Length: 501
Image 1 (cartoon, rainbow, N blue to C red):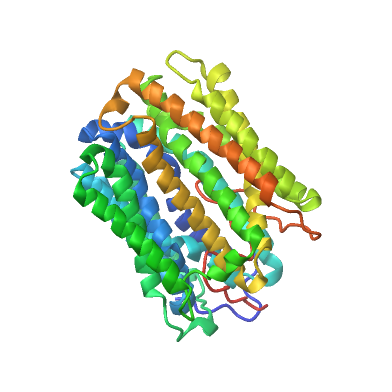
Image 2: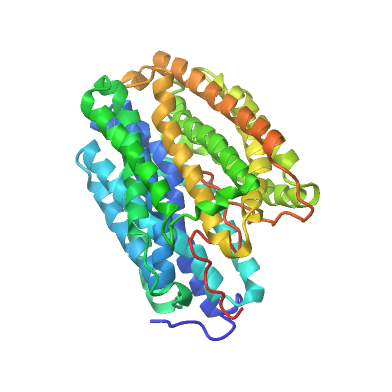
């Protein structure tokens, strides 16, 4: 097994560097692929299990819930016990959970498997970039991060097409089974070729187990109540679970403000810029989560798209972001983030408004693609400046936790949107299987998401300020369910150790 890198770290153009990239790209790629293809599989899953909309919501939210609740803990574990070790734990856990999803006999078992996948994702996601940061020599880190971003973006773009093909040709179960051989390769490569690293300053410091538990339990309680409430008639047990979730989240805030080594440094929110940028993140990513949950279902149920056609329909979204996100980051660096963060969400809202009109019989090139392209343009203008603003609002030593908080905010926003928006528009139970009822609810949901995006733009105009210094540039691409990570900002509550720097 490879030990810590020699002084200065490994070179990008070396066999050791290629092995590190292979392990981190494939490992994070498993999570990215599942994030992009599961929504495509929802109609097939619902049909096989005769599942209501709540079951489909939990198929998405179970993963996001455990990932969002444990992401900060995963970064902390890597810093203390070794990033390679925790990364490999996460890969193995994710692969085993994927196998459970593959053989799930009921929707309930699938939901449990998805939740367990999120636990593995919380261990491997922060580790992949932290390993690159700690393993490569300082001069090669930007190009290594860029390569990781480009390859991850390619996986994100390929995901809907590959997933649709697997679903249509064989079964939706293959989108999970494919993770097992990938996980085995990643584990072998990582164990043999990835150097170990950790934050020596973090060793011996207590982990905030209470913070991690309260976050996960609080989110679970609230999301359960919002998802189950409409079907249960908001009976006493549902209300009690929701109330317990709220109490747990309030207790989390109290505990984090009082302990010496909190999971989340609440002092970050003393920055008006940091708080404003995370508020914009919450609104915009809530719109993104709600829209992308229902769009693939609408395409397959109401427009009679095959899974591969529905997956392919979304590819332009990722391709546009691959092409334009880095340029948007450079533009923000020159003129400041306020204008891109104001215009971008409004443009994205316009794209969602166009997509709201999609109904049976519509042509892809004239009725669907324009909305996707406008939406993608708006997101491209928004994501990199938004994330860079979050990072610039924090001091360098707190950049890691700032990035992790922003990612968690984005994922929680998606959680709430998937749980709440279908309820607001009257979609519940089996109603999504009726094309007419689905189209009515879908249209209202996409318009709500469009309004949320516009609100995000107005919030940016009112609260985001341009500083006198250039905004840090972010990697050129990312999975679209959460903001990108900067080259020096890992999803970890403790700044990662600098290899040779």
